[in-house]
Length: 229
Image: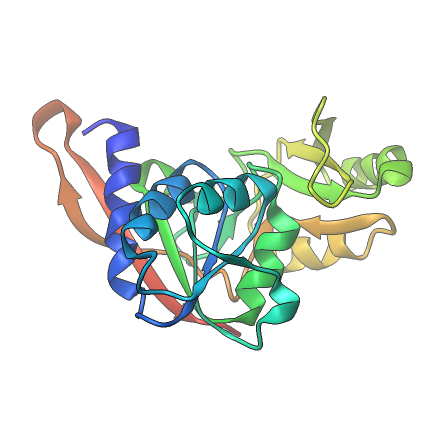
């Protein structure tokens, strides 16, 4: 299987957790896009979805799925999204699609987080994938200086404005041995909106089965189900 085929497989596998008559929290990114395609086959059975980005909203609406504002929803049964990196402690990096703030908010409302990812996202130590940090625009340089003090090499993500009107700093060169401590430290920097180093309720995925044969034989990570913290 190609990586995109694996993404499609895990995206469609998550459909088993969707209950009829419910509102589904939906993430952002290439793997989440495959889940949205799958969700389209159930559009007549669910009430609708809450989306973590304008891009996902557009795709959901294009499939005829009603999109609720989160403020209209008291609770969500599940939130389905991918990951950029996952370590053995089921901690992860999110935010490659620049939707990390809304993703974290919706996940915090959901009773369960369904993580979908292919095995290329598994790492021993987080940090090879740059750590995204959403920042208030006027604070970009000040936040970058503080991130350097924490041992990172921040780079401004050019020509990207988040759906919240903010900017992204991608932090390279960090071996994230303690994601919880790092998340707390970065969140304490004035001007930081959200950091993509993720702990609960983002507790990762479990390796469930294999897909493919021979040269293309790769582990496939099936949806992991975790109660929200």
